Length: 321
Ligand SMILES: [Zn+2]
Ligand SMILES: [Zn+2]
Image (cartoon, rainbow, N blue to C red):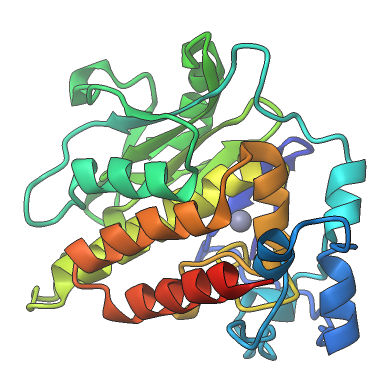
């Protein structure tokens, strides 16, 4: 169902109904010792940092996948902190320190997520790295082939991927393009949620299917938040790949792979201790400060569960001696 288009192109969250073959993968749930070891040795850190990279019971181990879930069809060995650090990830620095989000095409009010909120959340998540939302590119200027599939307009994602690396600003560490238009990677595919060139640190993702209107459904009072949750989750997940962070198999974590929308919806917004430590090495944040920024966002947007979760984590980190 998923495949690599080229060695450096990942089709992420790309469900194509036209491609049905599914290889079985056996997922063995990592033990508590495996999960702790995956976060790496933390003894050299001061107590708050040590606590930030440890599971004090706030994290749920990765659940067994259902038949259609990501780990049922993808064999992923897991990327420990050490393995990530030894992969020589291309970290921010040398003037490339900023994260960019580029909206492509129209973002219709009531259907699209609020771009300002997307910027705010990404900035809290990747604190202290600056995050800039670029001006939206009008439909007419989009450098991609267009087709109509089942009555809906789609842009060819690979055309956008060829163009995006040239558009990454000189001070940009990574850039994610987002659109409300559906995407397709080539003629054999029905659609793709998104695609990224991790080597070039660019990607493009569509939120077209995140609103119930896509399937003719009606919005209700929870829809705006649902769309915001989906969009912020995918944006921060894909940004995570830009830092060389691969899918997480240790905990329920924002870096888990997802085969379909229901699986992505069940994934938490937060990073597990393993992925948090990788991001810390790359972005150099103060964990309690970062969680504080996320708490402000969750509180301002009625995301109660997430707000309570980060509040607990802040208290645990601050209490560490
Ligand atoms: Zn992914
Ligand atoms: Zn993780």
